[in-house]
Amino acid sequence: MLETLRLCVQLTKRNWIVYRKDLIANVSPTIFEPIFLILSLGVGLGYFITDIDGRSYTAFLAPGLAVSTALFSSFFESSYGFYIRMTFENIFKAMLTTPIGVHEVILGEYIWLSIKGAMMCSLLAIGFACFGLIKSLWLLPLIPIAGVLIALPCGALGLIATSYVKNINQFQTVYAFFIAPLFFFSGIFFPLAQMPNSLKYIAYALPLAHGVEVSRALFWNENVLYVLGVHGGILILYSAILCAFAYYRIQKILQN
Amino acid sequence: MKIISAKEVTKIFSSFTAVDKLSFELRKGECFGLLGPNGAGKSTFIGMLYGVNSISSGNLEVFEMNPKSQARKVKQRMGVVTQDNALDDSLTVIENMMIYASFLGVPKKEREKRIKDLLDFMNLSHKANAPIRFLSGGMKRRLVFVRSLLGDPELLVLDEPTTGLDPAVRHLLWGKVRDLKAKGKTILLTTHYMHEAEILCDRILVMNKGKSVAEGSPSELIQKYCPGYVAVYDQIEKNESVKKFGEKHNFLIQEDRSGIYLRAPKFEDLLKMQEETKTFAAQLRPANLEDVFLQLTGQELTADA
Ligand SMILES: Nc1ncnc2c1ncn2[C@@H]1O[C@H](COP(=O)(O)OP(=O)(O)OP(=O)(O)O)[C@@H](O)[C@H]1O
Ligand SMILES: [Mg+2]
Picture 1 (cartoon, rainbow over the protein chains, first blue to last red):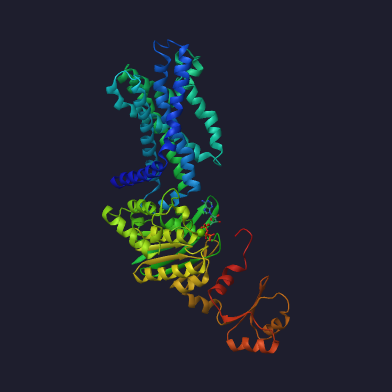
Picture 2: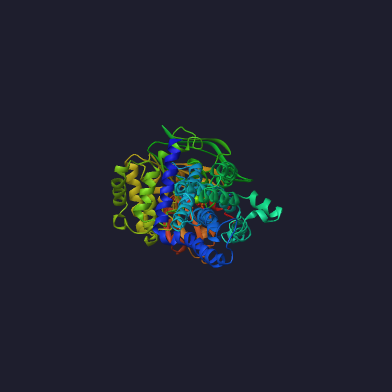
């Protein structure tokens, strides 16, 4: 048990060392896309939308965009990233000859995804806080929780995709028909409340909408305990189910 | 102590039998060769030794432990030179080794020194800070040796360690393998170079299509399957006279697209054949392991091998 943890930490260290080499290139897209979005939509479109659920459009967008970074960073890491490490770089082949086993490879991946999700989400939240978009600064330390709760289920989805694709190009299909709609229809850009019921149900059947709720509660200091309990609880459940399934799929590839 | 004990070990991938009732024992301090054509099941067997391939039936023990359920303990004492280098291309030589040393639980204080010593041993010190992509094929292979030795393993598994390397590097690696053996390491080697197996291995197992077809020391195998001497004529034409001579004297004759092989128990017989037929062989030599290998696995070489 302790040894498993130690090995997972070493694996995470390895990922961090590689990631650090191109830190700027790795961090920029995840961080700057939401910043451009909040500038173009919040500031630009916000000129016309002055009141949305009682807030400025910028304030409305900020929490959802912050948590969306966890979706993208974890999905890309566990799809393209993991796939490349597994099939092109072949690094697990050699790792598995060391005391590292398949479960450490996968658990290590979950830890790494969580750290990245938490990190990205926090970076943006700190940036937004500078512009007064976070109501109670003492809630800022809780933001990483939202990042982890989104990174785990979405990263697991990426791993599941990795276990099904026949080649690396097929991730584009997953992105176009699953990840992009998830991003656009999870209530980041408009309140889900006045959407048709069917769309609402679909949105809440998927993880991101719950992450947006958690992030909003923390940014706006509204019903924090209730939202963390309900939506956070749902996300924990999703994480457990999806991570377990991803584990089952990936271990079948790594060992015979 | 038996380092590896395999009893009727079998591996079935869905319906394809890759390893078929393989049995052998590897004793401490021995260098054991696992030979066989492409697809014979060598790498599949090696995968079973470190737990990435499960055992479909039979019994396999490494250090008297179950390599699947006690994989971590087994792997702590075993180093593997994998068939693919599988080096971490995003990292430098030293970073690669530091990470693997950490996986193996080498104490922090010792890591640097151990890596430095092993890079010295494999003549790679000058490349310590180079990214992996700047290494030649031979350097990468030597680095994989370094990686396999980081944990100071008792058992070293070498899966085609010299495939694709130039003769100089190959000779260098043979020397290193001998050094390691002299230091008391037990070695399991697979290779397609029969000469390599002949000079390095105490015992050899030849497998074909997952099955063991022969086992023994190189000289035993030669004695048993191809005793004597060989004359090789590498021309396709003009072989009629030697063939006739061979048939008359009951030589073992093998003919294929690359030429004709005549085997005789005595060297003098082959010399006499040259004199009488006035055709000179491209090679006149004692039979070697390659002859054994071809004899045991060659005839049924098929397109899917
Ligand atoms: N995961 C797998 N699923 C199905 N078949 C497999 C799998 N791995 C290996 N095989 C098959 O098992 C057979 C043995 O493969 P293996 O790699 O063990 O051969 P080998 O003796 O190492 O060959 P080579 O000398 O080419 O390395 C091959 O026919 C291969 O296609
Ligand atoms: Mg092989």
